[in-house]
Image (cartoon, rainbow, N blue to C red; front, side, top):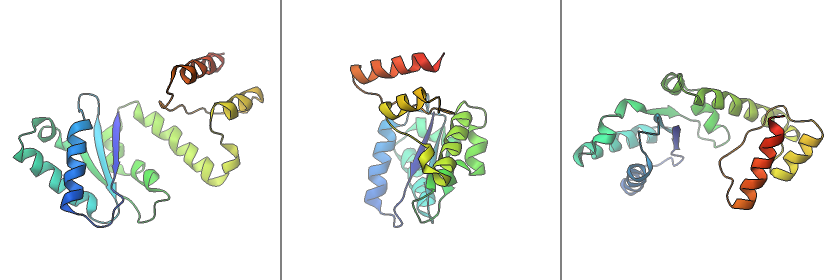
Amino acid sequence: MVLLLLLLLILSSDKLFENVFHTFVKHVDFSTIRCVVIGSPGCVKDEFRGYLLPEAQRLKLKSIEDKKSRIVVATTSPSNTHNLSEVLNDNAVINLIRETNVVLEIRAFKEFLDMVTSNSDRACYGSKSVETAHEMLAIETLLITDDLSGALRLRRGISMLGWLSQ
């Protein structure tokens, strides 16, 4: 798994960094996360990484100290429109995740973003729209998020997966 952390704030602050640091420590488990990508416009990403690593060292958080090579930064443009695409195209990110299954997922996601950007009418969202597209044999690629919650939605998702394997 790759964790993408986009710091979209132009100005850095110690309180912001402190809050993000505590969230990072609480949620980042390097036994399941291959790398962390910190992206932002300007120097905020570098400033945060410069805060993160010494703070981890000060607190003797070996889990972060030992994995600092797996925490990379990526530059994004000031506009919010294509930040994720920029991060996913960054060479440092690509090199770090090259040997993971994430590469295939990123490629599919990039193709999806390109398609939505060029022709948003070709994308559909939600189970009803996807079922309709399936009935019309109009699905070329199906991206499934892990945001299915609740037993009913999960059962419906599993039944949809049944026709996907056919």
